[in-house]
Image 1 (tube, rainbow over the protein chains, first blue to last red):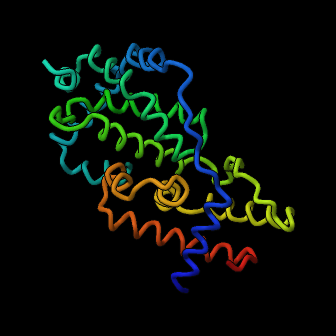
Image 2 (image 1 turned 120 degrees about the vertical axis):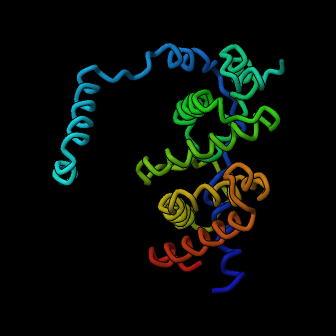
Length: 73
Length: 172
């Protein structure tokens, strides 16, 4: 493969694919951003926190259960 | 206090002001990469959303525009990795009175298909450098990589295209 071949590919690409036209946004996108800003952040249900606490307690008082826990993950 | 400093502290009004200053620029940059106006709109929103969420990481002493463009490039890159590769590219090239229009059309389609099958990173570099003729420095800055890496990606894209075209029976 030579440089001339690569140059030819570049020319082919230019003839086959048009550059994007200078387009302007015809609408204001701020309302969409605002909607996202107002969306409540994802909340973790209390039940999940209880589960996490249980797992931590088990790991703390029964360290021998840790490998079994990892095995089941 | 400066607008950028207020934004870095999470001021929504400052963010809105910056959004209004840069939304067109970001949109035009994204459309250069994804070449689809509807997707570009959605990705512009996603870009500014990511910008807002990482306001604390923004250094007010640096250019907001350059940072926004970097985030936009990453958002566009993520999009290109997800969408199916057979996306039709706009065909608004001026016709150059070909000797055989059917062959010309077939050749164009093969090149477009081969181009759309390039890995996303190579495609972004090749689109910006070869199609949009964006300066390498600008591409490097927006991709947050050295100029040498941009050149190497364009080179690899060219070589891959050559290989793909050869496989499809076209001998460039």
